Amino acid sequence: MSAPFSWIRPEPWGVQVVPADVWIDPGRAVDRALVTHGHADHARGGHGKTFATPETLAIMELRYNTREGAVPVEYGETIRLGGGVDATYIPAGHVLGSAQILLEHAGERVVITGDYKRRADPTCMPFEVTPCDIFITEATFGLPVFTHPPIAEEMAKLLKALADNPDKCVLVGAYALGKAQRVIAELRAAGHAHPIYLHGAMEKMCRLYEEHGVDLGELRLVADHEKDDMRGSIVVCPPSALNDRWSRRLPDPITAMASGWMRVRQRARQRNVELPLVISDHADWNELTRTIDEVDPAEVWVTHGREEALLRWCELGQRRARALALVGREDEDE
Image 1 (tube, rainbow, N blue to C red):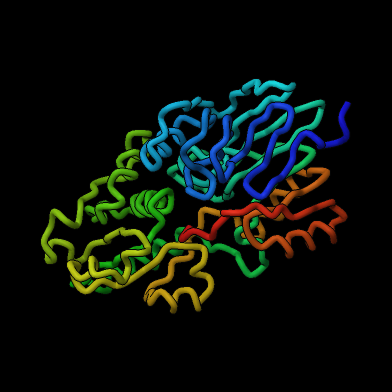
Image 2 (cartoon, rainbow, N blue to C red):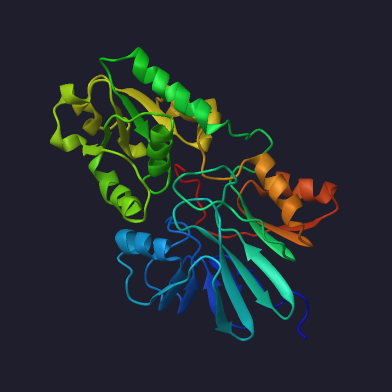
């Protein structure tokens, strides 16, 4: 038998599974890639073969025009990669189609989370705790200051702002993949049945979600309507459009942004956000630490975020941990 975990090797551009000669979420084109989800810091085109859930492959085809070499893997399905390595895709709860990847080789189990959250989300399958020997976790919000509020509270803030300003609209900046669809679905769950207006850049992804069974209610394009049509309405746009010339076509918009980073007041001020909505598709500090306790790995590898605090927490709990220096893992407007 090889030395413990010598078969999985972190490199700056991704994690390599050596016996099978495959990569997890590589930042450059490779012959065979296992992809956790469709965000650009995890997915890209140019691979010879791309293994991912059917939903992630659909997202990648829409965003990166990647059809050739796509190999669908259903949740719970185990595939043989060669070299004695098996891979199983497990729901991660991050966005539509997002998956953790369980790798098994020589009696050892490694789970790579990709990005994940533990909160309920009507647009994707919930995270599943999977015991393993090494747990490779993201740490986007890996500081104790980050504790995300219940999303119902943020929806109530949004709907109150709308009710208090019937002659205006509320313009919500939200990341185009995952966050926008979640905000819309949560608004529907909160009883908001009125049409929601979209920036044109949001339409195709919202339609893809609907094609995969996510009900988003009536959606209208801003470009198809007059300014007065949108008074008393919610409009969803990419964060980059919040203060763009495009927003001038809207009726006195109240600017809001849905992001875990809205917990940091300075970020809200920098973007001229009047209504910060703390809504994240990543685990907060309490969820990160609870997940590690529940998974109970022998060792934790931390990437994509604030590694130091989580490493210290592991050390205090007498759990082995290390940071991975992966390139290209960005904050996103998540």
